Length: 159
Image 1 (cartoon, one colour):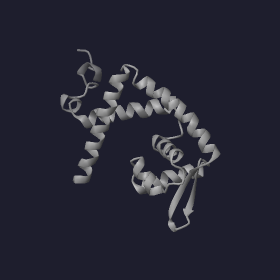
Image 2 (cartoon, helix red, strand yellow):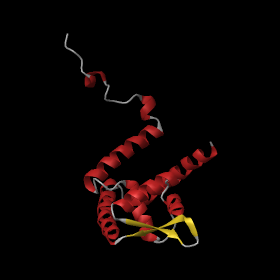
Image 3 (tube, one colour):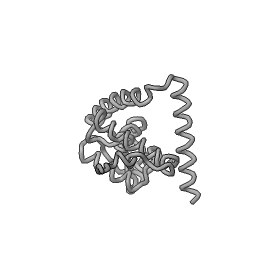
Image 4 (tube, helix red, strand yellow):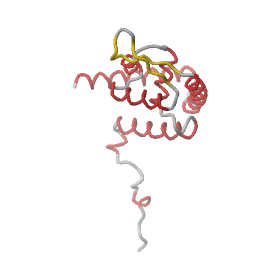
């Protein structure tokens, strides 16, 4: 009798209980997205770092806590991301004149350049990710994803 390999037994196919679970599918999407991001956008700049640079670029001088909320990071993660970006010379944190505990965020010239290049590549990645969908379908899909994220975030607050 021939020895069975995992592919012969269907071990590479998830059980129905997993494939029917939304969390499992979201994790698969996220893993694929991160792999594509590293390959096509930037192997060093992470998604959360990109989000922070984008938010700071859109609203320079806002405080770190407000930015954390805007990019869906908790305040301790935001502080770590901001420190890392500052260490790489992409971001400057300045103490607010009216409150020494508040840190105001600004892009450096290098940060502006890094953001512009990463954003260009991220838009190309978006096009590849959404390639199978027409403009109306893309809007509907993004609307559904946003509604789902909003709902799931509410569940975490209500728990």
